[in-house]
Image 1 (cartoon, rainbow, N blue to C red):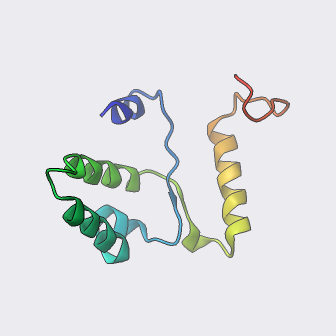
Image 2: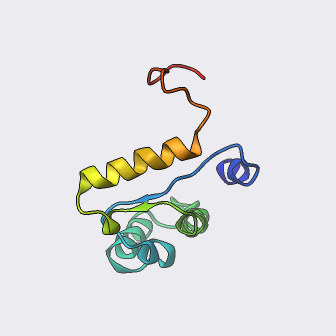
Length: 104
């Protein structure tokens, strides 16, 4: 819940990346993604996976956010370039001269 609160308060930026999966399948737990998720919960058992309902809510929330999907890109390089450009737009305060891993 802390992550969801940080997103709501604008303290955390979420840029979903849907790689070789349809957003609708994630949001509605359908298709191969939904089958794998439900199988994991079934194998673990609800008592061993008590956050399953919370995870479903988070998946649906993330699926509603603007992000990136591999479906709309010719190849992985194009997808990566789009992600990099998207991050640059979301984080304009980062200096182009800063090194990766350097504190802001």
